[in-house]
Image (cartoon, rainbow, N blue to C red; front, side, top):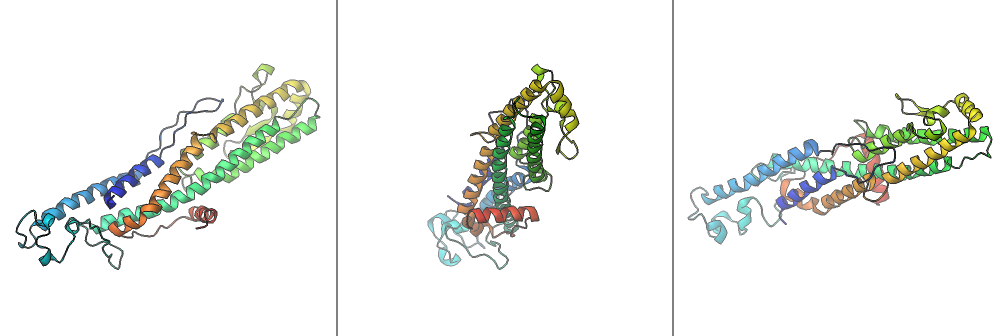
Length: 334
């Protein structure tokens, strides 16, 4: 496949990696989420691909009348005139040599019609290569953490009527602590400067677990309106959970069986929400699979792309991305 063909395939993969679809949703309700678009990179790559293809035509027309020395418009196909030009590779006249042409000291391929545009495209690919690896590492950690939250929810469901009020309170506080650890670790990673900013799988994972906590239908059959009636609430500014022990004690004193049923019902629903996020063909696995495909494709074809389009500027990752990239490289022994 030619380098332009490789770049076209890469563009298609980058488009697919920017979207994540899911066929399942949690029991707490269905969330409509807009499909993520590929953004400035995809638009830029499309324009540059068009420019590079146009360059091929311009190069062909220019080669036909090389200072008036070409005798026929078909000379470039038959090899005629190669003595004058010093070239034995017909495709070199199109700027698509089948052999690797040397790059300039600045890493540009000066044989291209627009070497600077090609170099810029390669700079973006270099940057995305680093970003995708960092996202793969960070999302893999989130997947592990979601499994941990599933376990935390299941553990909370072990409360029973035989337990004293103090033991039940301690169990709910332990769950709150684990939930807060989850928020502190990943809430910032989806913000504008985070590693997973704009990543649908990560954003939905945080959203779904919070919605599960705030579901007002847990305990409805026992006269409760979710965990908030048991004193368990989430601060809307910090997204952190807290337990009002006074309110919980009152609920346990007035309707202990109902309060325990509410905790058990919440536990089952919360664990199911976490399980769905990590299930096959759902948000997190789909995004990881797409990232893995793009990373592999860039790795396999990067040398060919750089040989044709130039080296491009090295990626300049932020501190957060650099940290996640280091973790990726450590895991894969790079």
